[in-house]
Length: 477
Ligand code: 6PG
Image (cartoon, rainbow, N blue to C red; front, side):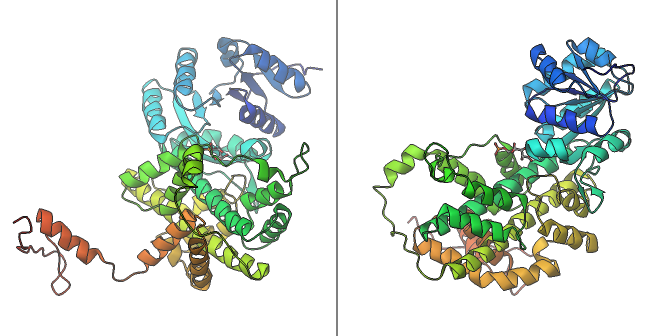
């Protein structure tokens, strides 16, 4: 039975794919009336019919959709990032009134968001680029939302965003991130960190697999980790994945899934931005590259019989290995977040976005894919020292890294000696050892630069800022 709709809707959503549908149901469940529009009309009709007990208005045309909304209109677009977002915006512009708000809730590139923000504000329309994380379930029950745009527009959207978002200790997992593209930027880094987390888990899995752990045993290991300091959504779903049996063969499903990873682009965007900002995010970099290497299945299969390496043979007490890999994983994870947050801090300062890392960490504690117990500790670290230069140097994390570093080294060594690729574990350890090195071999590098290009160097026995050049021997003859 359809409810009689007698008033204009509080919120509108365009794009009824899975995320869009779940967000609509979430918004409606908080007491708002929602209008929906989808390019394929049948999808709209089916969706509204399937939820006829809810306060939904299905529109067949954009004109009807826009007319069904109370002003200032609040319209969220949930379509594929890129061209489709521009297409929908162009279709909406002539139908909207000054002050209406368009929210792009997809994984848009932050520079696209900045362009759209400027374009729409010239037309008197308001725009919010909001990263939304949490997948289908998060969208329905409470995602983490990262909105960027003018503060005045955030104030209008706040009641809806706060009511639909996940909550941790009563705090909504949404905050005004900053102006312009700041929201989509922070979502992009969230995704880069997500790539890092996933790759680190996969490397732990690979070591365990080489040590003879079955999928069932791995289910137990990850379940136990999820009851401890590594507790997180990704560890939790990994435990469930190991327990999943393929109904067709009776085998563990994970063992039947082809080892080639996909990616839609946010990880690549993250590393491109890190290079532009001269910030090291080697763990995320390794994670993106690991996906690329995984996708080269045929080349890897061909090389596997040509290029030599040891046959993995990991013996010893399984419980001991579990503890060591735990420490390596946790330490690497701290590094990955330290790098991602460093990039956010650097970019935020560059763009004058006024980002608050404590608030960003706080809204990642719930709803999103990277939600994890240790985000409470990250939040605390930035709340007690907003100027923290690097997460590794927050006392809580320094202590953990000092405690884990020996096992971390042993795991990287063990994997390397056994020919098991651990690019993200070792990139993280390399970052840790480089960052804590009072002296690096860059003296030699500077000499090389001065040798071939007269690029000059500073000296250890002279004040900083004085540059020297040596007339090196002529090697060409
Ligand atoms: C989220 C996810 C979601 C999606 C990404 C990653 O926060 O809900 O990050 O946005 O999983 O697009 O996708 P790829 O792994 O395909 O790049």
